[in-house]
Image (tube, rainbow, N blue to C red):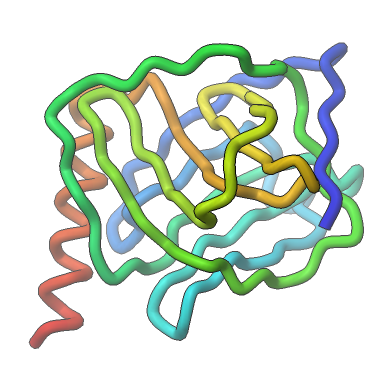
Amino acid sequence: MKVSIDSNKKLNSKVLCEEYFSLQVDFGYELNKINSFFQINNGDSQSLEISVNENSELSKVILLCSEDFTIIEEKIDINNCIEGVISFSEFSNINSEMFNIEVYNNAIRLQLSSACEYKKYRQGNLILSLDEEGKVVSIMVINLKEKERHHIIEELQFSKEERLS
């Protein structure tokens, strides 16, 4: 998978609080404009879906399921992001090295690799961190409102309880 960014374009994002989805970030594309999607998985029970439009631009991100998460009662600061519209090419489903979720007071972070972050692309409130080879290291959604954070934690806890029962 190759990831690029067009810093001449900008898009806003919106976190949607819908039942059964811990995290859903939408970039305002109509459903019929979504052309394709791929998943980042870790085993059978942890999955994130990324949808792209007909131009292969990031359209929607949905955290489908997760095994565990950590709540960190502090804010996280993000610097040095290249802002624009993120595009993907040559994409297919990815099996990640890890799937660690951290919920901060103002953000959620999904760590997918132990590799060092080399650069960060930002589209709306979503930040995609890449390693030196251009592989996705982490995905973060920042500037969460308290209602959105509460929804994320509630759905993650519900998912965990369902798995354990």
